Length: 487
DNA sequence: ACCTCCCGCCATTGG
DNA sequence: CCAATGGCGGGAGGT
Image (cartoon, rainbow, N blue to C red; front, side, top):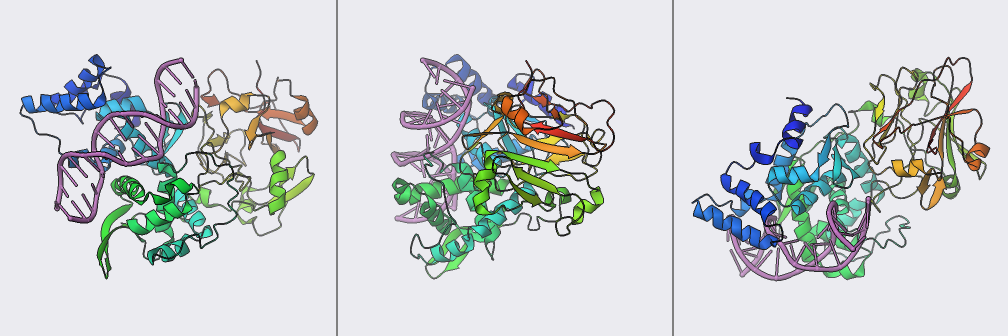
């Protein structure tokens, strides 16, 4: 059974072949919704109960409606390891298909998104990544968790310790006006706790305390109960993902509800490509300056040498240049500009914090297809860029390349600053079509050599690189992400 | 009686 | 302005 099949069942026909609503009454519920749209949900619910009773049917029982169960149904609709990132999810269809209120889908999707099992693409539209990125996501969360010293937080919270004790790195998260104590964020933090814990066990109690403690919103400091409720929700989804399981921890005062990590523990081996040397840590001060206008230059090197490049001062280096500041930093594997679409995700703190151009060989790609709205991957067909068949960012759904910004003259905006991101690839293999596009003055000033760019023909859904005529020699080619497009 | 946590109201957001 | 999101906590089911 292919994705297509699933998708067809999913998107196409009316919801009657729905495996999750075996009983007629649910179906009726659904049609009732359509007919009586103006009715309040509560009444609809009562109505469905009534109908069920009338038909002498099994009442659902609260348990059978748990988020966890619902999540399992959701997961069952898609492959764990899809071969491409082209499976799209429509919340409408899912909620109809699973026969639940839309609100519930948001709960699930939010925690799935926090683990990059799905990615938000647009309104009512997500992409399914499955577990393909799970390893790297977990690794990243673990890294952040350590960096944030979450293990210390845990010890502290465990003994009902004081508050505000530990320095959570310069949290420059100023003006975080956002109501982002969201499920997404909570979920990521919750997971971090497991990944950082020696025993890989986390009590809801401790988790809740930490979450409250971190919440910079003083108003939420007294909402322990609410936090716990949310944690249960998250835990249910994580459980259905097979990442954690419920347990109890012994304590002098009896047992406390807790969860234990039973998911993958070795994130490193898998997906070697993604595990390549990454992030260059630019010295603090430079970050800002570089962020004003980052330009990433990639100089040809044999693929082989790339693997060890991180330590050896091998051939021509890839480098990052802050155009306006005139500063240059050398990097190893490449870069990835990370910024989030969604505010304050622990996964990618705002800022130019890491750059990853994955230049590993052997990646399979055709043209590239981008989910409308984001650019999680920048894939360059190996046929046109043989030494560098794949350029990808971290698979970070938060990466802030979205088509609309790409199409604006401003290129793309980062922290309110318009930027252009250039990846210059030189050598005989790098080929991309030169733009027939007039460039902004600024652009012109910045560049040298012919420009190539990602076209986004027609729809916002695709970007392609087109091979350019014969290229030879050491001519430099540049690949600009964020060029204004023609039209 | 305490642990879970579903349900849906309604404030926010985003388009 | 309206639809899509999703914070939030009352109160009911489960044990």
